Length: 160
Length: 160
Image 1: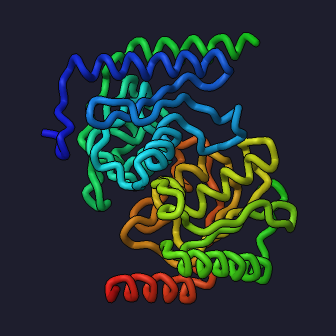
Image 2: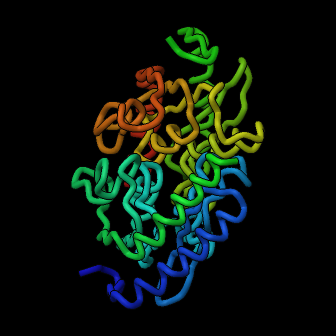
């Protein structure tokens, strides 16, 4: 069971992940690695973003970090204890670490990332009992769609 | 041996770490957890910052992430392959992950963080052979000064 009023619901998860996929697609059009994220609290979007590493010349500008940053700004509190984070790709170490810092109670992701994923693949920073926060994690939501988007992007880039 | 022209030198390391400590002290005055960072390339400061989580309502606003972001902005390149990062406290998972994303060749830190440090204490994300980048890491520079600053800050905060 998710704490802080975040009631998991398969249909709701699909809807928000579809929105995160839209963000990922918008990123691909701009030449960014197509990963999208949506931060939801009380049934509303608090922030949404796609990777923007290239556009911002910012190594930290992954979709997850961008929505956590914007979510804190909008709520006026760096603790986002009421929000669910949807992201199309399993978070990397930076993003998993940021999710822990923000005290996000629930994370839903799409495709697994065997090369860098830290929510179960290479490691699991989101559920490390030694850290001061653990999140509920649910992976594999619209995973195929998220994976195809990434594969197509990298295939096109190799051609270019 | 550090790659990319980053020649380690004990005296130089001390000077830059002293600057990072100044940043940490400036953070403490503003009620931020006193951690400071300086990003140096070709003998010059590319960016410097202290934690600003409270001021920015940003869970990701650790000193390291702030200097990486600013360093990318200033150079126009998210790959900071020519820079050394000095930070007064061992990086957490988020910051270690961000350092990997930015391809920082060399990291020098002050105090170890047994509760959250991911550059040797709880884990070592900076030298994980499974990730696509590894940094040279040198810890313990002005560690006592950095540790006393943090301990004093938390002791004062408990009193308040």
